[in-house]
Amino acid sequence: MKAPIGKIMDTDVYTCPVTATLGDVIKILVEKEVGGLTVVDEEQHVTGFISDGDIMRAVSKQKTRSIYGGDSVMVVYDDESFEQKVEAFKQRNVMELAARKVFCVTESHPIDEVARILSKKKFKKIPIIDEEGKLVGIARRATIVRYIFNLLFDLKLDKDTKEPVK
Image (cartoon, rainbow, N blue to C red; front, side, top):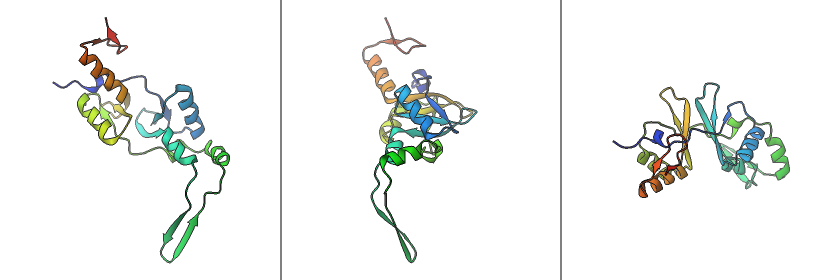
């Protein structure tokens, strides 16, 4: 039988509520020193995912672009300063920037399949949900690499800490 991702998943998952502002999100990212958060509703269902990359795209300088609509053309200029963008950013809801289609797996998903998904989709982490769709953990590339290391060197993992047992 293939080992399930639930065997090695991290259960200490940093999240933010669907009602959070982008200011709240940035505070959590900085305080927890992470690059992304799973967005959850009141019942812990995954509703989105926001990363530091989403935030960088939102505050970065945008190229001037033309939008064609039938017989008219609209030219969009980015004339806001970085500081103005950041200030306006604080009170916006997280779901304005969060990805709404979040790829999740269940605890019983095989580790090798999760590794394939992370690699193919170029994800750094993937939320893990239970049968009701509630968030129960997260699988990170680093967690799978640590598991591979432990297999290579025949180390046993502590059930709670996921650290090698001597």
